[in-house]
Length: 138
Length: 321
Image (cartoon, rainbow over all chains, first blue to last red; front, top):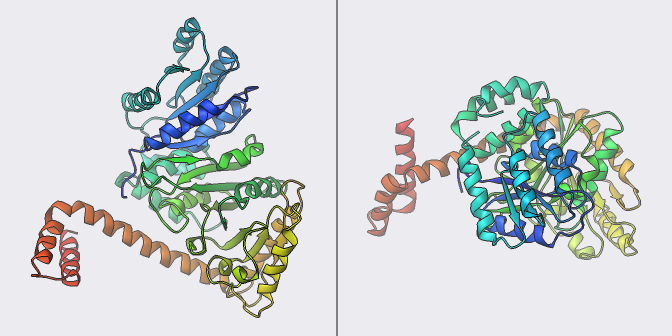
């Protein structure tokens, strides 16, 4: 194996009081099997911890899984912290149980993709690859 | 921070800019030509950090120990960086990097930097760009750089060729006194740690390792250093301060003999050899459809042999330089 420039790095996180991690493990596994480096933070992280880890790991994408209903609090905070840290080139995506109209709200805020509970793994992989391609090299 | 040239990152790395350090490591991992002059400049600024390797079998508690160890070292004010390596899938090339989970308590501290790396096909327990990443962290002013290898078996001992001090972590309940006298991973320790010592069967592991030490073999090749066996429990926070102390003492022992210079020389030699191998592999891929293919045809027709073909290929590569 020689040059590794094409490998996508993604940080998968569970934020706040949300202990449901079956879904996030399935997603992590699917992305691994698609050849990506997946950094999993574990449960109960804060937005500050997620952003700091994402910057240190220099990931292409942050993927936050959230099933607690706190998405309208968590995502704006993560986007704000990335901006403060001049790390807006990190793409923010999310998934979980989120009402349709709030999916639109999140996208307006700057969340690039929201994947709901019935999304097939292949669509998630395709979205991640598309988002990194659209961003271009960095 | 989009598309900043690598050379412009160097001064920001030296100033301790976290984003610049992280991006520089990504560039090093990508192995692209663009970052070579920057890495050369970074290498020139290294040599100050104490590089400590931690290795052991999968599940022995390396990451957890690393978390507690880092937190304890931080209480002395020194800056600590961690490079944690996990395996890439041999099938998809992807990886789950989960070492950070065990180090979450460290997340808020600016004097700590943690980076996960995937092996990406490299054997021996380290990733291909591990030492480039260590250079970046050294140049960035971290006092201690801890390298956590992948969970290893009996024989992946590359870490000795990368670190000044090597810690081998053993967990209770795996193997007996005969395992303890086998060649391989147990020989490379400057410090032995028996983890999970809140477990009742840990005493046996400690006794087996100490028994091995008294057989008169001074493995670490350093005559003024006796390899200690330290019992730790991350759960009860026992033995961690003792381990920090032992790491410091080992550094002093290296400095007070010619062993530190000997190890630096060993690391430099090994890096040159490894890098030469990588260059050759890359050149081989470049020539796969040309000279390599032509030579393979000749080999199949028995007009040449593997040794002569290799000599011809090397001559071809050298001519192009």
